[in-house]
Length: 148
Image (cartoon, rainbow, N blue to C red; front, top):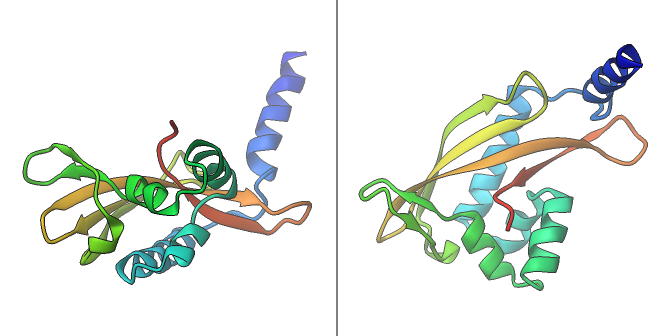
């Protein structure tokens, strides 16, 4: 029984997400997300979020409050005081990608950003995941923040 379970787990990890993504895919997706944030484009920001995460956090937990959803997603630790700061995304004046790191040699990426507002510079980390779209082998990227 153990060999069957191990084979199933390996198969699931290898094939369930379809075509593997590259760091270049993650970089391009992260840049378009950054551009949406800097331009305060609510719809484009939300398009970059994983569908399941969006459903759970924005739909169920926050009852559709898009401003609160984006504000909390883009909040993080201050560079000056290391205090956790919740920001208003509409005050963001700059955003840079600090790093993009592959998570355990698969399609998931840790993407770190530095965000600047008139009052603060903060660091945030989002998880970029790749999921298969329906029955096709095509994949869809989406960011995930914290749950709860």
